[in-house]
Figure: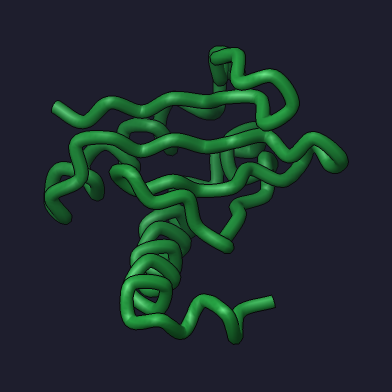
Amino acid sequence: MADIKFLNEADGQEFQMTHPKAARVLGDIMTWAQSNGFEHVAFWRDADDAHKLWVQLGDDRLNYWIHDSTFTEGKHETVEMQMDYARGAQRRSAAGFAKFDK
């Protein structure tokens, strides 16, 4: 089972995504993580913009973020695509192309 965490970038403290509509999205992320071989997935809340959740797959913190409305509005139909984009960002970073990401 994949470990999914939410953390504050400012202080590193963990917080819970307790919004009622988030449960379905979290379930989809859990399924995605298991299907793609990720034991750990973390979302880091941006210190300057609380609506940005920066994605971490495994040990790799990425230059890719997901808007918190994905969770608060229960946008489960788009989360798999967003996680696939995050995985693409991880691959670009591993290949040395992260310097070109803005």
